[in-house]
Length: 344
Image 1: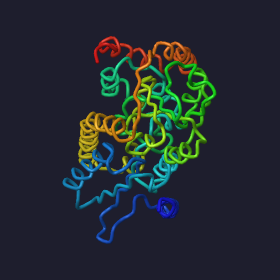
Image 2 (image 1 turned 45 degrees about the vertical axis):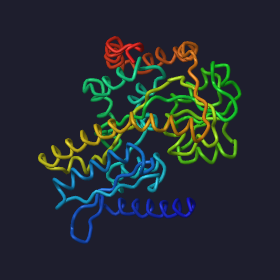
Image 3 (image 1 turned 90 degrees about the vertical axis):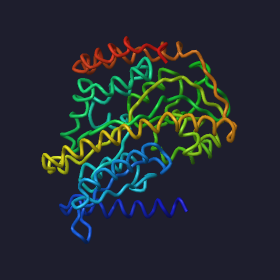
Image 4 (image 1 turned 135 degrees about the vertical axis):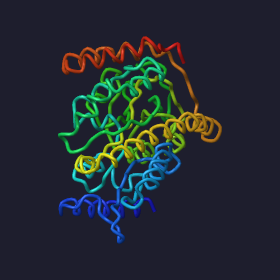
């Protein structure tokens, strides 16, 4: 069944690409209302989908005579990389992409991918809500044909494995670990001693099931919402990254909005952001309980100091490679000082 859905999705994605090449962005329904297609890679149970439904309700409530919002979950429009490319061309209007993937479109996104960049979830949220921090990052992809319009919480990333818990960096040696598709994540695994295997999220379950991978790293929802906890029985709170997901919009569509419409969409983006974040904490608690009690996942809390020390060189490397990001990095350090790790 999954293969049939994937084939149908690829056919739809191909049709959308042809639509974009013909010069039509988004498309129109029979009534003349413009269709806005939004793609993401999570299930309909995920907080991201919940947030997008709230966005849909608000926009159609305000502008339903002009726009028809259509949401495509579970990679129905392709992988994240494919959806970003479709958004660039205008074949789809919006998609949700991990910050890690966007690093390949703009070097500025490298900053948010740094391991142990944020001292605590509170510092992470405060930084991502700070326009002086996110503004220069979000604006940097306009030359690539899309605009970042809001961020979504993706929690804390931790390692989970099939056969053995990860208590120290040495436990990663020789293990094939799926990471997101970015040079920063590959470098992180190199310093931690594991073997980085970048791949799209939709391929991870099968790779774990066939033991092409020894493990992966993600938040707790991957265990339950995506079934990874059926295979991986050890989840270690290394807390090595807090990487946001980003909603991006086709630049031509965004520029084509009137001032009044843009204000309504901006309000919709805020509603999406807040709804998704409100749902996140509850979803994590429920996922952890289900993983532990129904899937038999063992949770451990290793000392993260050796992991922090192993990847510490990446901060200086980033600042040397991208000196323009130094002022933004310092602003994040101010939020870290305000919300240190012991504030949790």
